Structures are given as structure tokens and as C-alpha cells.
Image (cartoon, rainbow, N blue to C red):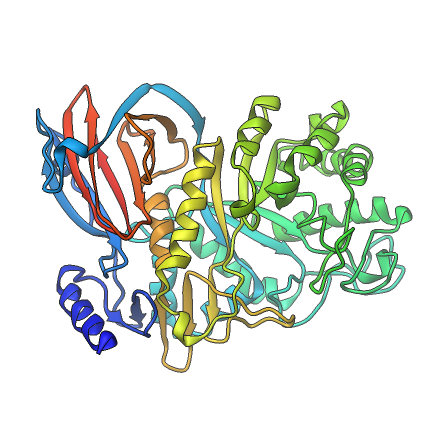
Length: 511
């Protein structure tokens, strides 16, 4: 009976969220179904709807709304349909400016590329538009694994010839030439904002490592420190020949994997001291000599629980610090660590940006998971708390997986914002997709986080930005089962009364 009632409610809401073709898999919320002939898009924003005293409001909710758009006018006195006397009051402070945003995005793993290409040409076009087009997420960051990751069909490197320290046999693979490079080029063609591409390595070729294997406890042999640095230049040169230029790189994906923490996935362990010395003596000078001194080099690329000691050790060396532009963070320890760790790192090293470079729901996917609102809230909470602690952008892991959570050659099929069903030639946008879109679609690179003060403590998470086009963007999230009343006050415009539904996320923008 409960399932029937939920289905009826969602069917009714499909009229309101008219651009979403609703499907209910029995999870806590819905998915939006796209195929070769149809896919939902964000309704365009006209100049009139965000100027002249008007603001535009987008809302997604557990109840079934997906980026539903309304336009209203500021008022001199704000009243809410809920309880104006108890409303949370947020005051916009445009003169208080914090970090400049780099953007939002995801990783183009082998699995993602294979799943995108598994669809018909028209369905693939709709999926790419969903992530990079004007009516979609408009992702401006792409992470590209150097060689195989745990979401590849097999383990491989670009030089699997044992002992080839001169890298004479280095060559890109079909995964790059046929799948990833065409998708990168298409993404850049679709997104007028531009797409920044950065690279991360999971492991050196097996023969360069102490244990000579893919996973386990795995370290680079010291005699291969320089060949491994040369490998990076070979990689960037190979992509340059395909007319693909990178913006940045990380020194190693999750260096704690395969280090003190034995790993079941492709990995290569480093201590902070080893990473510090390798960058100073090998990677940094080699990138500069190879003509890649412009690349933004990021350290760590691991969970923020280890951030304080790692950053202190690596950036405490002046030579290393001179080569480093940023700190890369994964989100997996967010719920067990204090986000103030990020602010402390910013205060200590204000010249280094902090970028979230990987996030993923680590539970095995099943059909019953499709449409889980809680997984979207996990993303939303991480993004909001990270941004309010000086993070300049947030990058998802796999953008697209299949119904089995892969393909992956490892033990761990996971979840993704978009799930592809190649047999039906359709794909499903999950709540995670919409949580990210509430930021990525409306906060372009170059936006600055601005002040948004609250009159009292609240369960409502919030943040605000000023875009390069001088638009104010405010994001609110309510993860509670009860609605809340919020009044947003802007001295230059007036007041906005927002009834923040239970389990919902909101984006409000105005000129």
C-alpha cells in the first residue's frame, strides 16, 4: 500500500517536474529517464527573470521535484507561509569575499567512457549534453586516470615492457584513443565555459615497483623515481599529439593505498616524505624541463583525515612547495573528520588552492538503489561544508556506470550520478546528479564565495556566490524530515521568503 501511494504521488509530481520522465524503482526517491529521443533539461533563465527586482528559484526534493523553476519578486517585508516569526534569517554580504571557484566535474574513467559509448549516437549526445551542455550540469572539470584505474576492464600501463626505463615502448591504448579522447574533445566543444582537464596516476608499471604486482603493499623502486617522472612527460606529450592539453595533475591517487594500507585495487604507496622528495628532485624539475611548468601540480589526492600532517610535511619543503599549486582531497572521510581541517590548511598555505578530486557512494549498486535521495544528500552536505571551508571546486568519481556498477575488474562495483542501460538504450539521472547540478549549472569558474550570515544556528546548510556576470547565487539544503522557513535579506534588493521543503535542495539567483 505504501509503495502504491508513493507511486501515485510521484506520478502527480511528474506534471510539476514536467521535464523529468519519472521512474520509480522503489528507492526513497525517483530517477529521470533519458533516451535517444528525450532528456530533461534545465529551463533557460531569461535576463528579466533575474533582474528588475526579480529572482529565479530552482528546487529539487525527495518528493520528486527536479530543478523545478519559479520566478518571483523581492519584497520589502518577507513573510513565509510557514512561520515568519521563527524563520531563519540569512543576510547576503557581497562585500565579504572568500575563495574564487574553479568549478565542478567528474572523472572520465574507462568505465565512464565505455558506458557513454555503449549508447546509440543520439542517446550518447543527450548524455553528453546532460553533463556539459547549457541545459545540463555544465561541468568544467574532468579528471583523467593515467593508465588503468579500478574502473578499467583490466590492469595495464602505457609501458608494460619489463626494464624499459627509457620508455621506448610507451604508447597510449585504445581506451584513450577510441574512448576517452573523443569524449574530452566533445565535452570541450559543448561547454562554452571551458573544461579543465587534470590527470591522476594509480600506479607505475608493475616492473617499476618493489613488489612487482598491481596491488597489495606497493612502492616505487628508488631507481625508478626518474623514469616514473619521465613517464608523466611522455603521457602529456602523447595527449598533445592528439590535440588534448591538460590543466593540471596530481602526484599520485591515494598514496596511502598500497603504502601503510594494503590495497585490493591498483595502487602505489607513498609516504609524505617520499612524495615531498620525489616532487622536489624528480617530478617538478622534469615537468619544467619537458615544457609543462604551467600545469597545476596538486599533492595528496587522498582523504582529508590525513591532510594536516601530509601538507605540513610536503609543503614544509620550500623547493617542493615552489612546484606545487594545490591540495587535492577525497571525500570518503568527510563524515568522520572536521571540515575545519580544510580552513586550517588554507590559513597555513593561502597560496595553495584546495580542490576535491574524488567522491563516490561506496555501496554496491542494485536496482533498488536507483533514486536514493540519501546518496544525493551525502554529496550535497560534502559540497556545502567543503566550500564554506575554502575549497575551490568539487569533482565526482565515475560520471556514468552500468546497472552492475561497472565495468570494473576489481572487487568493488559502486554507484554513480548517471546509470546507463545499454540494452534499453537509455540512462537514468539519479538524485546525486541533481545535487551536483544545483551548484555546477549556476556557479561558473571565476565566481567568488561571498558572505551569508545567519541570525541563529540551523539545520539548513547554505552558501552564496557572486559570479563574474555579477549574479548572486545562493544554495540552501534541508536534510531534515520537516520543512523550514528561511528569509534571505539583501540590502540592495529586499527580501526573499523561502519555504524550504523537507529533504530538498534549492538554488536562488538574481542580478
